[in-house]
Length: 329
Image 1 (spheres, one colour):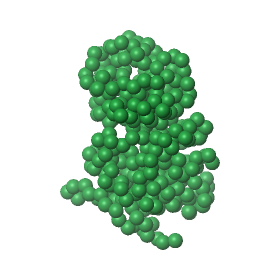
Image 2: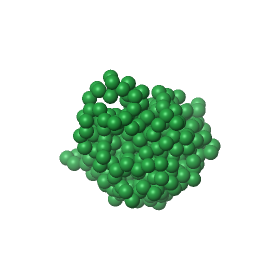
Image 3: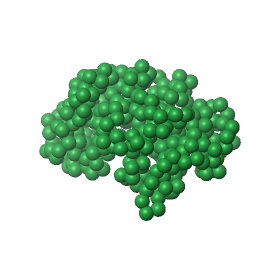
Image 4: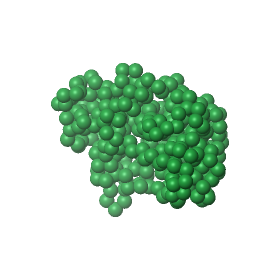
C-alpha cells in the first residue's frame, strides 16, 4: 500500500488557493483511527470553503471536504477495527481538521460513526452531511410537533441536498410537503420525491409583514434571511420551524410577533457538534426510514477530479440533490 495519496488542499498566504496535491500519512492530523476514504460529497459549505466565499478553513494548509465514508485500515481505538465501515462529518472537518477530500484520513475514533449494515459507503455519502442534517431537522420537528395530518410542512431550498432528503423523509413519514424552490424546472423531480405542492422561492425571498396568513404546521428551512423570516411569519399557531442553513443569508430580519402571538417555536439544527448519541439515532433512522431508491434518484456521482471546477455551481444553486464524490476518479 503506497504511503502517498491525492488530496485537495487549501493554502492561504495573501489569498486563498486550492489545488490537488500528493500527501503522505505524515501530513495528516494525529488520531487513533486511519481510514481509506472511498467517498466524500460536495456540499454548500464545501463550495464556500473552496471558493473562499466564506472563511471556512481556519488553518492552512488544510485538506478540505466536510465529510467522508470509508473503511478503517488501522485503529488503536477500542470501538473500531480494520475493516469497519465508517462515516465522518462535522467536528471541525474542513475547518481546523483535515477533511474528506483525500484518499486517506486520520481522526479520533470519538468522531466516527460505524455505518449500519444496510447502508453502503456510497449511500452514506449520498446521504452525507446534508441528509444527516435533514434527519436532524425532521427529528427537531417531530420532537416538538407537528404530527402527520396536522397540516403542510414547508421545505425551503428544496432542490438542494438537505431539501431533497427532507422532502423524501417527511413524505414517507406521512406529512404533506410543500417545496419552495427557485428552479421551476425541478418541480416534477421534487414531486417525485413526495412533495405535493411547489412554491416559487420569490414569494418568500423579499421582506414581508411580521405576521402573515397562517399556512404551515411546520417548516424545514435551509435558506435563512428573508425566506426564514417569512416562513416564521406564515407558520400556524403552535407550529415549529427548524433552521439549518444560510443559502440566502445569515441574517434574520424578523420580529418576535409570531413567537409571542402564535406560540411558534424556532429550533436550530447543528450537524457539526451534535452529540454522538443524537448522531447514532439519526443514522439508525436513516437506515430504517430513508427510501434508497429515492436516494439514488436524488444523487449523482462526481469524480474527485471535478470538485474544484464544480464548487462554484453549488453556490449558484446549479446542483440538484446530492453530489457524491468518488475519490478513486
